[in-house]
Image (cartoon, rainbow, N blue to C red; front, side):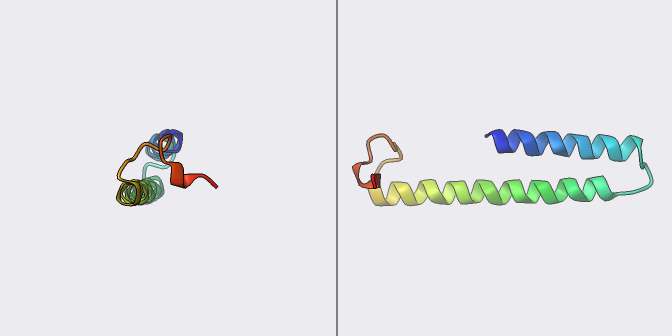
Length: 70
């Protein structure tokens, strides 16, 4: 969750600085789209991990999963 907040704050900074410092360039917007794509891929990986955990242990509660111990 903290990584998502950091990425969103970077997106806001890229767009604000792009608009006020370099209004003719589109670099900040392209970086913002790239960061949004990375965040979407990160969410997809997290969902895949949760689905695999549920399939193997029939629960997503990590506290009760005895097989996850080293």
